[in-house]
Image 1 (cartoon, helix red, strand yellow):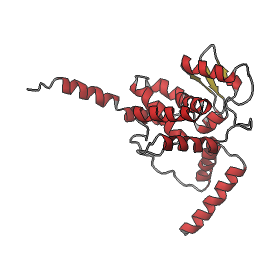
Image 2 (image 1 turned 30 degrees about the horizontal axis):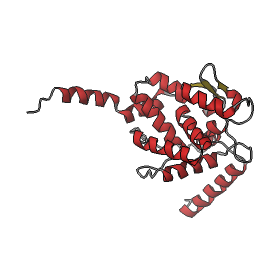
Image 3 (image 1 turned 180 degrees about the vertical axis):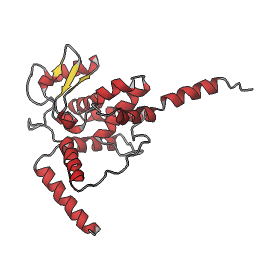
Image 4 (image 1 turned 90 degrees about the horizontal axis):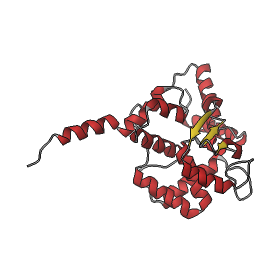
Length: 232
């Protein structure tokens, strides 16, 4: 049997290899899926409860802290949140992926290399248009060196902003923003089928966790029940 230190050594080797080869999140998911098949290892049961996400007040504190850092950092975090993209999808976005007149952003490198179209609000589109000016090519967001942001750097920025915003209830990651956006959309009435397409989920069961987190049916039932109670 392989002991714990051996496992750590293997994990470190894999992590270094992935970092060196710039393996994306989607690619790493595919690799581990194929490895499980080869060694006939069944994946563990996933938590079917709720997802970890920020409250609306925490998100407002987060986005305020992001814009305090700089206008570009603020817009990056707003775009990451409102599009609910995975971190590797976000860092792969190019200027020509934005369809300004149609209020859509094209995700060309989604999970499983699947393409999807994400609708965005007019306010965000105006901000992106101002940010890009007349530029039609290259990454939507560029570092000070003019290069594309790495997944790792975006993760670091999100962590730094969460610290500045004094969010302590959960660890905030780019995926936390995705969870938060999906939950807010579910709370605001977006149906599971449309939410599934928006998030790029292959299976509807994956999307259902956001309606569980939003607890829409429970809240509605609670409101109806408490409305009938008369207090004396």
